[in-house]
Image (cartoon, rainbow, N blue to C red; front, side, top):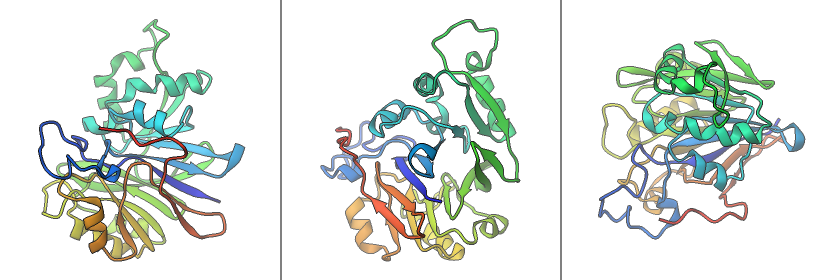
Length: 280
């Protein structure tokens, strides 16, 4: 079974370039230094059998979906409810319409779902009589694997300051954003993962995110063949950092697609699909 992870965004909460910043990365002409808020799309299977699972719904989701030629999904997975990971929820109306107005299947931790209901009450109010919104079937998970449109998903709990965040494993691929600690129990759940996307905010330590060095260490603990980093701020210039990293590790970038093919090969596609990167 082919499993692909497509970078819809690779940036930190402010996005890159950051408003009001004069640093060289924010003013870089390199399109790989242009980073929308972090999100990925799992594409599982191929052709008519492909299942698309959207992980997080950033404030940039409209642009991300247009750029990825995405018109429908089979499930929406929420890692946590910080604004940069869920405040695009209203824009899922386009995916709801594109999916034939079938309710979107939304999966989250219980506390995350409760927060979404508070912040976006009208989207979950069955008595709200307005047609221009998305509708959802909601599902909660804890530690056990769950199934979305026939795809088995294993939640990977990680620590983000004083809150828990869900990473997700599908087959031998995994995605973990927004963490400063991956507990040993979660390292064990990641064993056998060959392809990992992992939070790596900057070089220097941070109280709620992994530094680049710590992220490399975790990838080595898991024993992955390839790791790509995400949730990157403007301290990390794409080409410079990649020149310093070992061959099996790279910064991710918007529109990058990484996959384990049906024959077991790990492949990368630098992205685009005929759609030009967004200009800033």
